[in-house]
Length: 89
Image 1 (cartoon, one colour):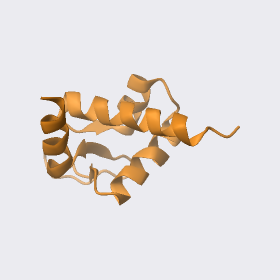
Image 2 (cartoon, one colour):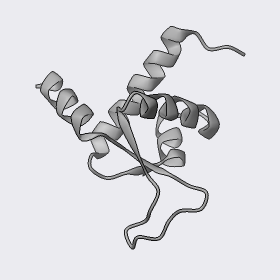
Image 3 (cartoon, one colour):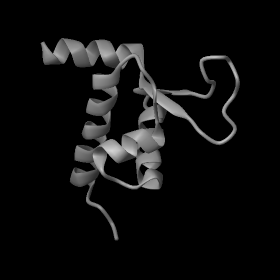
Image 4 (tube, helix red, strand yellow):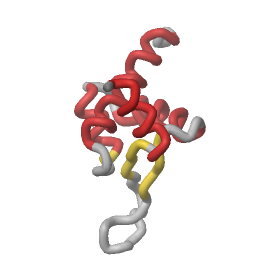
């Protein structure tokens, strides 16, 4: 089933909203998917599109510096966070 570009854009905006609300805390893909009520693979695809645009940053290490083998956490880039906060004021 194909989702329209307009729907994809709305879901992407929702992902950004979730990341903005949690900034600077990074979230796992599964946490974001749960928050927006979408499956993880679809959510991951949208997040990777945002990464290519430089809007989100992948975090591949835990707080102790150990690399994740199969997981990624995500957060807004500083530039995106500043633009978002200036827009919401």
